[in-house]
Length: 566
Image 1 (cartoon, rainbow, N blue to C red):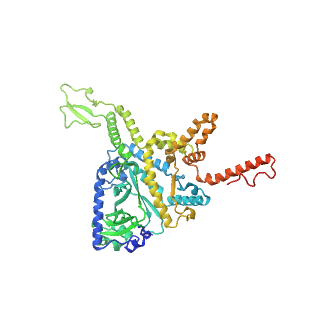
Image 2 (image 1 turned 45 degrees about the vertical axis):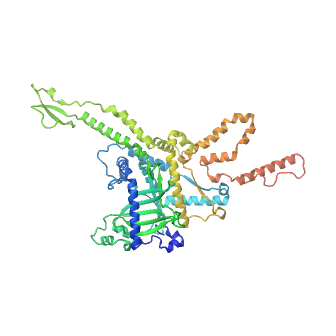
Image 3 (image 1 turned 90 degrees about the vertical axis):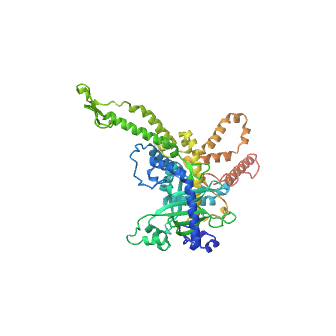
């Protein structure tokens, strides 16, 4: 299997030459395709340009490994010498780790499969199928390296407000399985459709000619790249490539059946098209933290904390300079006149003219004034502002609970920092809608085509699959519903004591099921509605038989097996 999912296309698409990782178009078609692809790239490049300088500053102060938006990417460990404060970098790291542990932890179950038809999903055979499919999805995420890549995605989401996860099969090793990769965002350009959904992704990346030949085959490369493969010709010098994934549409604006997205790989320099293919689903999973109107991009905790990060860095630098001057101040030394410029550097010697005779009192430190302690309170307040922007207090409260004894429940998470959970809500909702839903749609379909999921029972065919998110952070967002149910029952208890008939207003089974769902109660521990009904009917028959027997009616007695169900 190859990177382009074109082997799932309709026959018409195959006849059109859109085979798996198919060679690029030739002649006039190739030139027109390259021109249109480059034009689309330039449009998206201009649309992203206003954000690039801001993101570059965020990267410099909080994540140097992700720099490259407005310049050449540097070494991940290279830092500016004037950046002396690491508060924002630590806060971004805590945000990424907290999101992984709280929303998609590798150490606990954080999603559950179900069907839109809840009664059907409760049947034993369908429930067994859902459980097996769920277990295989968990195994695939672990085996294929999803979690290390997702934490990088969370890190970039905290810094820049969005993330891009590439979900596909390995094109070079057909049997290697599915792969996940969190892409550096300076490579990625996006656009959205009329519904505000990301449907276009272009990626500019670099490969050496040797790597390109291994990826596509030497025969597909341009003549210039093939020449570069020769000895001493620069086979190790990186070259820019472009991958464009855009929606496939017919003349009337609707998507063609089969392939929903077209995929084009080309050399960005000379526009040589390497391959043309397609995907059944968008392989780039793009999630935005806080959507901005009028653009496909987002703002982030990082952009919100940038001003504070710059200020606290400057404050800390000044405090360090003040400390140096306090420990090693410049000195005043009498002389016939000043020699050179006056220096305020530590241990500097400044010579000055004396009108009368010199004494030992003339030799001493220069008082520069100021007290470095005056800004410590402001420094602490600014550090707190940065930590609040990245929800550090919430994530550390959750991790502290884990260190003290185990996995916190949704109720405990909600109670640890209810205000912070309220503010975290929009980010979690977007993660659920744009990240997890697209991830599972892509992963489920890929695994189904590869034969890695169990066949669905006939009764489940045609029914929509539902994914419930049962991680502590996700459940804590819905905890208010469960608490509302429980609080209402507690508050009406005095009324029920004098008027029991008011309980007829409530659907008790549905309310209890809702509370169990909000608390992450396992599906396998809940009886289906039909089974509950049969159990209750059996109890009623048993009670009726006992009543008839007590009345002396011959032959009356408990029905065989009455009251026994599951």
